[in-house]
Length: 237
Image 1 (tube, rainbow, N blue to C red):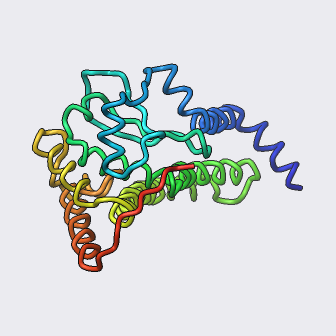
Image 2 (cartoon, rainbow, N blue to C red):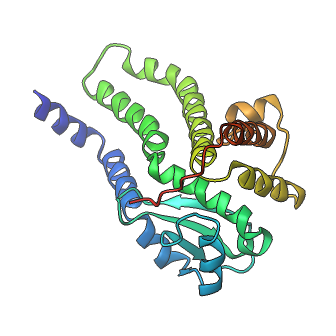
C-alpha cells in the first residue's frame, strides 16, 4: 500500500518531486555549490591566529571572496566533516577579532544543533503531506491544506526565529555572549541591522529583533559570569 501511494505521488507530482530532490541535493552539496558559484578562501595566517586566540574553531571557517558587499555570516552544509561557517570580507573588515569570534560561534551553534533540518523540514513535510493527501483523494484535502498555508508559514517563521535564539544560547554557553552582542551592536551602528521592528514585521521575520537578541545575550553572559562558568567552544564535526 505504501509503495502504491509513493507511485501515485510520483506520477501526480513529478515537478514537486524534482523540486524536493533538488532541494535535498542543494542542502547536502551546499559547501561545494558555494565554492563553485561565488568562491571562498581559507583564513589567512594572521586572520587564523587572531580568531583562534579568541577560543573558537577556525578550521571550519571560510571567507566569501567578495571585498564589497553586506557584512554577514552564515552556516552551510549538513554532512559532518563537510560543514562550514562562511563570513564575508566586509564582516572581517568591520568587526574586531573578538566580535568576529562571537559571530562564528553563533554559526557553529547552527551547525552543531542542525538547525537547517527544522527550518527546511517543516515546510517540506507540509507540502509533501498536502500533495499526498490530494493524490489519495482525501476528502477536503485541497481546501484543508489551503487553509493551513498561512498558519504553517507563520510557524515556519517562528521556527526560524527559535533557531536564532538557540544559536545565541549556544554562544552564551560555549563562547562569549557579550562578544556577539557587541558585534550586533556594531552592525546596528553601521546601519546594517534594525534594532526595532513593527509588529507585523516581527511576525513574518526569520530573525528575532536585535534588541531581544542583545538583551538576551547580555543577560545570559551576566548569569554565566556570576556562576564563574568557563566558555567551551567545540568545532562542528
